[in-house]
Picture 1 (tube, rainbow, N blue to C red):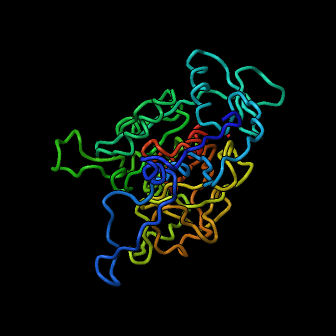
Picture 2 (picture 1 turned 30 degrees about the vertical axis):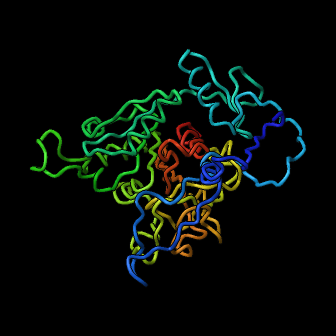
Length: 346
């Protein structure tokens, strides 16, 4: 429609499919046996496209009148696809400016707007296959970001001055630190970062670099880099706390550069994710009540009001901890912006 909205008629043979994609999921509380642990789902428990993509959906009984046409905002910070144009401009050798209040971009200088340099991005790729690393690669390529895959040997040799930001996709802390044990693979494919790699990462961040850890990889930052982030759900059993792939409500710290282009409250993809005690480094906290937006969540009280996103200073640089998967299977368009914002200096 002219006001930017869409109408989906439900008097059609495929209305059930449309409802499945648009309505929120309420996954049943299934147990292995009565009173026992939760029965693991085949995959995940939420696939609510409006929540993943930041689109408001409302059921109506009659066609509503047309609303006003939304004002045109070229390269709007709220439009994830604006990052495509930003990266095209950088690739062509052009300059990019940003309004640090709204998050909007401009390809020409504007008074009061900040010029944004193209970040030099590295993406950690160890020897242990990691599906989430593959999705992160796909996302960076889809949106035109220039990046390099960075392995154990390169990091251990020192990366300060070679990159501005280094991303660690969802992976266990042990997988990053230790990799494959000796004897389980050919020698050249064994091992992880080890202490030399951790020392190189500390040197990188202290010198002004940004380290980004996604979901379970945050445990490496807490264990090996000394980041103060107490995971409040780490030692809970599945009967006490369980979120096998659901959309949860968080509240963002308004005005922070990571929140540019996003509303004050959003839903994030949580799947075996950490949560931390709130601190000065918190940039997003779970809602105090009704945390579940779609899917299945047991033990809501353990994360209500807790931190889901943190940014801790480290020397001249910083370490960003995403207690979520902001690039989940390249479907969570709304929270792509959280990750993209984290790639820029602030």
